Length: 361
Image (cartoon, rainbow, N blue to C red; front, side):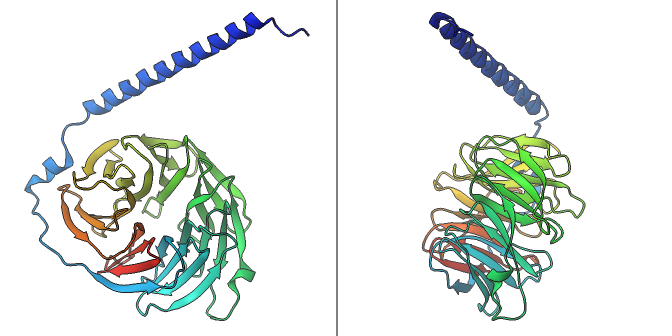
């Protein structure tokens, strides 16, 4: 088999490039057509609908507890369903379980790697999951015996080909959902470590995920470095909705309590609200004076407030309906990396690169 003469190869390459360029313009045209169709349904902005709603008065929230014990940046945290315990993970490789009332440390695990970017509490409160630069998600059962060596009972559940960016148990301790720098999300069986479903559709690192709040909800949303927020069907593995209005990485996504919308926080210094039924962005939470990225977002229990942790060390509190900022909270001495409202809605917790966690109420 003779290799084709050089000119022929060159023309093949030119043709290939032309086809690629042609396909790209075609896909861009289709995208803009879709946007036009979406815009036709776009009748009114959320803040216009909410004009007659009464504004929120001044409210005072301040730091009620400070949790100290990590030796480096706190990267992730999660509440236990008992509304009292917290798990946090840090760049020092430690995962700590705290009692948020007494600030006592109940358990501590040292991971084999630094940069533990993800941690999650199991619904039963009897286990925690964590992972990061080890590309794995490990589950540690928690026991009442304080002196027990947790590392001995560690179970490796998920394996990705790049860092683990987020993890979350589904409605039981038996399944765990992960997102990774390898551009995928995946659903795993905790007992066997088997991959149940994988989710492909992001063009770059997936940075965050959140499960739909309803018991029956078989969907979750993910956000990533491709500036996209994708909604997935857990059973089919298909992406069922996709939103691309941010101008930079999406660091955090969180469902609205009703499950009909979700918020996202991005390096473009904005938080945005997407209505799933209207299939579009309905609000942007931003100010000229806010120029730093948002690392983490969460809703109050009623859904009226959106809390955002920012890289300028502050927490901004937004009125979801009116789109205005109702409060700004100071306290951390470095960027806020993670923020979660407690399950009963009475407080929220933030973790920061200043090595501490704070409980606000």
